[in-house]
Length: 208
Image (cartoon, rainbow, N blue to C red; front, side):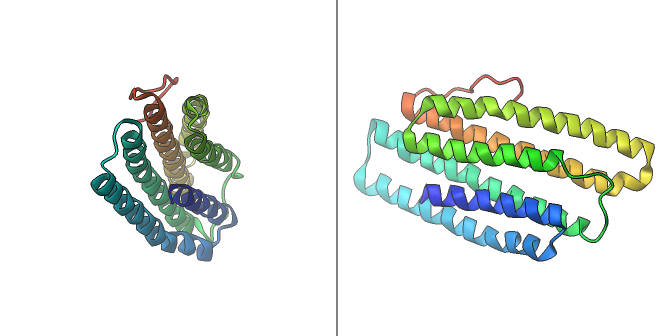
């Protein structure tokens, strides 16, 4: 169930970015509608986990697996929410030509989607090595976010007519950066699940 939810929210992110690139309002609306499904998946996993806790009274490693799943679905639900935010921005930007080609935002999205897939794979394989690599991969997203922010601020300073569109791009970049942070949370919980040690994996930057 958790893997299904992870794949579903990754699909929401992919569709939201497609809606942005193609300026497709219908696809953006579809992403927004899917949020209810993601929320239902979240509730179903939480209910199943609580039932296991009540009926099976798991100890040690089994207890950490269930508690990790409960933490992971919270982060996955937030990824779905940020995907909806991107879809709403895509709707706002539809119908007006972009003042610059969309290169960095799709690149950030691809990196972020790979982090989601790798984190889910780390969960399946119970691999702390893969989980720790996901945490390190967050740095590339952070660096792109910072560089794009500086570039877009420069555009806005030079031409006030670009403020609205550039501001949307800055927000979308921030949404992607936050999604990557939530995936990092997932990876850190996987390390805890396997080791019993809850710690922050060292990276060059960790968002708040």
